[in-house]
Amino acid sequence: MKTVTMHVAKTTLSKLVAAAEAGEEVVILRGRTPVARLVGIGTAPTRSFGALAGSVQVTPAFFDPLPASELDAWES
Image (cartoon, rainbow, N blue to C red; front, side):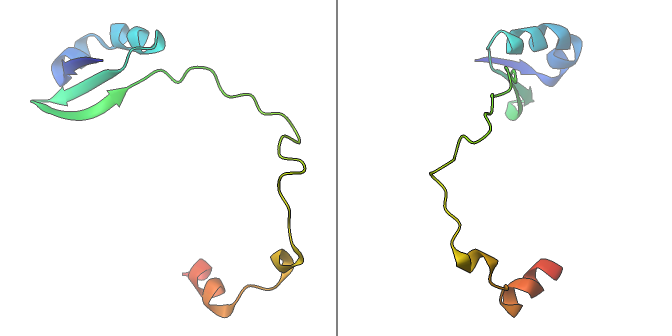
């Protein structure tokens, strides 16, 4: 993990982004206080259609109307 001040982060952003892309974590400090963390996002996870098939069940209660208290919470 690399720590840099806000000023250094502003002047070397391209290098810090490259470091994050390479897997390094960069913590940005305001004074001595950590305020942000720069990490690479990596590759998006792959999703396959039907991955949960057979492991999730919906009971008939799922289709019952919501109680009034629940409906009120959604509308406020």
